[in-house]
Image 1 (cartoon, rainbow, N blue to C red):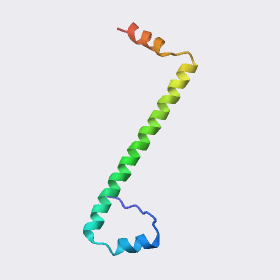
Image 2: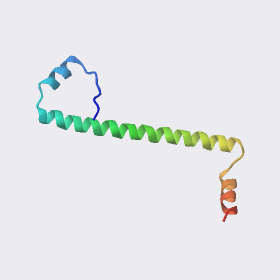
Image 3: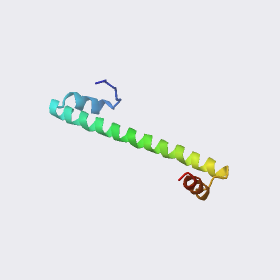
Image 4: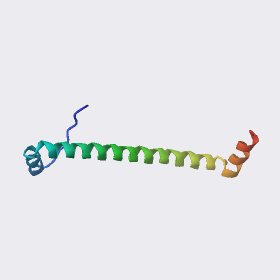
Length: 76
């Protein structure tokens, strides 16, 4: 496992240093989960953006859904 550093205000840092190991463990698990979830959401949003850009470019070049359907059915 790798360590990362998060900056917080002095009050939060002091409270963290004085919190129990059980609390710290639970918070670390929750933070790992939240970071992982947000990164997945971000990658999904970036992927959707790329798909939209490709779709827009294809449409700008004359490739409509109808033409795409024709192409797909020609290969059957």
